[in-house]
Length: 121
Image (cartoon, helix red, strand yellow):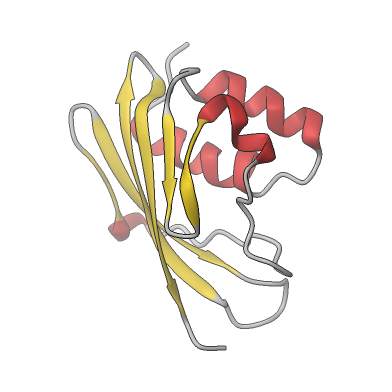
């Protein structure tokens, strides 16, 4: 079954970046991404989706707390964007950002671009 672009973006946020268990995270990466897909993040060099489990994907000292706003989520024919926020539970969000993904055949295929903006906690 092929996921919608919006669903892939939300799954990426929760099941990859929000998942602390390495085995569940690896399973999600396998299901969501093409193996050669690249992840671009302002905190380091690009990394392949197959290596996402080893990349420094979490902001230090935070547990991802995604905030998904329906009016801030868009999809085109083969790409989409999703606003996001990170922060410890029950505290103001520390980082906000935007994911942009290229999708093909129900998987994030070529690339995911993450843009982050510290909120100045």
